[in-house]
Length: 178
Image 1: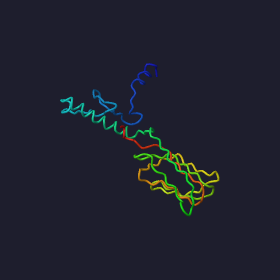
Image 2 (image 1 turned 90 degrees about the vertical axis):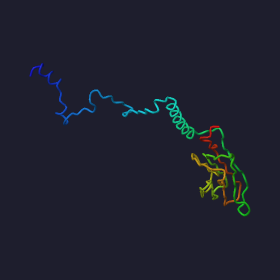
Image 3 (image 1 turned 45 degrees about the vertical axis):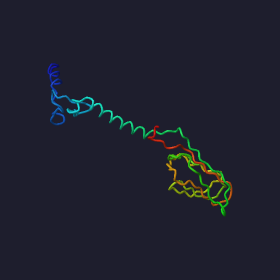
Image 4 (image 1 turned 135 degrees about the vertical axis):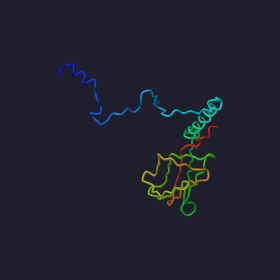
């Protein structure tokens, strides 16, 4: 073969020889949009541009409302605590009151008390039975508990001594931008 015949063969490449029959995806002259393959055509709204703009603004408002709900506001910190001497016979529990009128997102819990004492921690509808380690404190974090104003925050101790319960987090103001 001469070099002229080799050039002709390389220019006349037939894809059907490799992997079956070659069929182009789009015919020549057809415009294909990369991001939006089907063109949106709303003729009745395009005749009245103010309705078209109003529809766009309503859609934008709906999307921005979703962003406001997802954002977290840390401007109202929660630090609820109660320190108390507990005797099993007369007063075996410590109750902490909510700080805000809105729900609260509790992100950390600190409990101190006598070593090896057992206690129960009730936060809303959650109940935990725990044993105090030799360090005389338990720090539970990271966590996120959403407690409403009516949810109970109670530590019930089974041992006599100085106990404390501290809840830390922030008020849940998602979606409330006022």
